[in-house]
Image 1 (cartoon, rainbow, N blue to C red):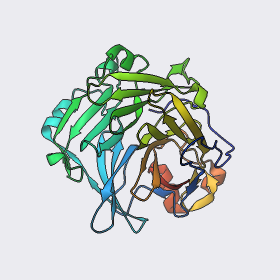
Image 2 (tube, rainbow, N blue to C red):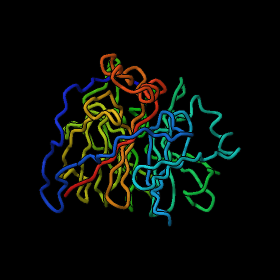
Image 3 (cartoon, helix red, strand yellow):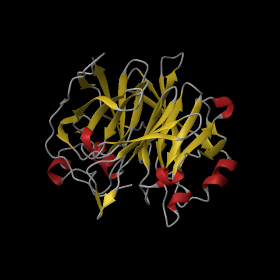
Image 4 (cartoon, one colour):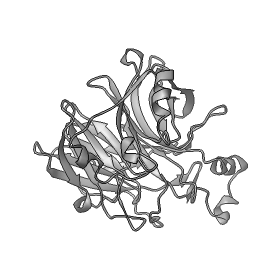
Length: 338
């Protein structure tokens, strides 16, 4: 998943356009208690690319599904805002047998559809025959219950036209953004490469949930987006997402014909957990929103640049250094302001 892309060195925080109509997101405000390492004393995730909020339990714990691009899925529970607990989500023998045909279990995005009680997983293709594997997969929990500790079924969605769906995919490049509203799926192509460099824009595909046909392919060049590595639906035809390469959250609103009628971007910083005066090279790839309008992002460590330079690294405590050395993922939290 790690491809060469330009590193943003100087950050301008909270830049963005105002909206023309309706409620306007005016700022994306960082939570003072974040970012935090995706770990506790006994457990940590590894190469976390996807996150989806599934609900709040009777103990007032917020519960998420996390997807790692090494083929792992977890539940994350957050209590009192900063207390993390984790548990693995197991794959049934049937699901493992299905995935064993893949060159890599490259899980990039996970989504829970509250309208249909379905769950989806985006998997990138690898190897010579990558097109056989890249796609959006429906995953089944027992009783369609995403709080269950196992996945018991998996099947690839037959999105058509297939030629258009696969056109810009490549080994290790697929749909890192995935979300849904009542009627549609929205697929964010990570990007596409030219001469081993990412192009300056990509596409968002809008797919009808009932017949799985591509309704429209929306280019991001005029929106100023280089990559799409996370998507979340705020409402009907209304999205927020992550442009990983330019390190910003974006907002897009479509009309009934899926023309963009509103958009804005908000530049992000990437401070080191508990050392907010220092920044590091983040690779933000997953986004979700909880039932209190909090936005969560996850960072899938880009191993080539994740560890800070020596002049910064030497000023960190031993545990933080260890977290970097072990490529522990990071989670961010923000509040949308209107």
